Image (tube, rainbow, N blue to C red; front, side):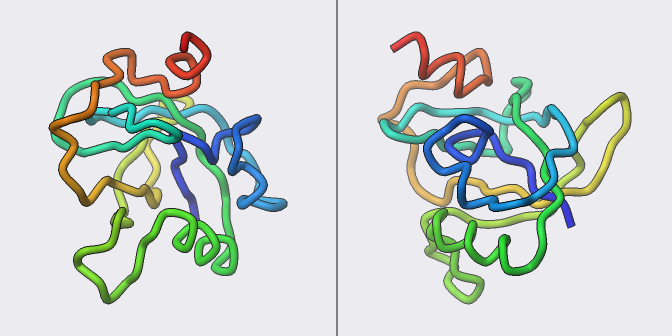
Amino acid sequence: MYLFVYGTLIKGESNHKTLGNSKLIGDAFTKGRLFDIGDYPALIPEGDNDIKGEIYEVNHKTLIQCDLLEGYEVENPNSLYIRKIIAVKINNKVIRSYIYYSNFDLSQYPEIASGDYVKNRKKK
């Protein structure tokens, strides 16, 4: 199974170790709106910005570890983040991948218009 990451799980970022030995498939893009909420970003699907990230091939154990990191609970509709399956563009093709979307109000946070969390963080 695949996981699209766009924040602290990206290679070189603070939570990348959570992915363990997962295989990097490559850089990828999806659509949405990305927000800077401090130490990590939040993404919502409503929006047309290109959101830059990476696709990893993950196993079930790694996905569960990422769920814990993202505050996602399968049976809890009020989880901090929710996990969905979406279509993601990678290398001129589209694959189905898991992604974590924000499940809380982002109205007080600034949007990352570039859609690139790493680039935005390095500018701070």
